[in-house]
Image (cartoon, rainbow, N blue to C red; front, side, top):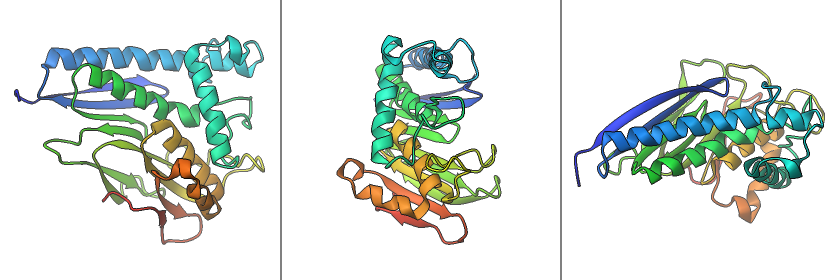
Length: 256
């Protein structure tokens, strides 16, 4: 084992800041920084393809009917198929096609891309990894010496108050709710603002699906608990702050 080296990056992309933290005892700082540079380039490509705010993005062209999904990039087709699977798993509570303006996979892409970033960083020798894409986190290797990452969930009413802390070594954690951008999540079934929960946190092996599941629980609330009986979701854990109650509810054994 060599000397442990550690570095971070803050990437201004997707209308937010993607924070990346990496460390390793196997490679030096130059190799870790090369990984961060590759991640920076990658997330900018993702933004160029998936942004609904860029008129020349592939998503924007799909929304305007100028590009068919079968003619889009391989990763656009990959996300399309994954969103279809997430829509089915959530019984329609997550539905990127029932959005004003047309198809919008934003509720899947950040977690999905964070997973890809972790794979890039591992290829460059990173052992301890945190990729934080505005509340969608993918983690690997723990913080240091087997110690898990400590991830706090903020109150939806008070951004300075942490109401729950989870200890995670490997995996994804995604939280959806009102937070900074307000009541932005709509119920695909009604077209109205979602009222199922104030905040929903999902922990599991896949960043994109955790993101989609958290969104679906903000829509469905406790009615959405039933979907976690599906075998495909057996590895996912849930912690939800209800809309009109103070006591949170959960599914599965949570890492804490």
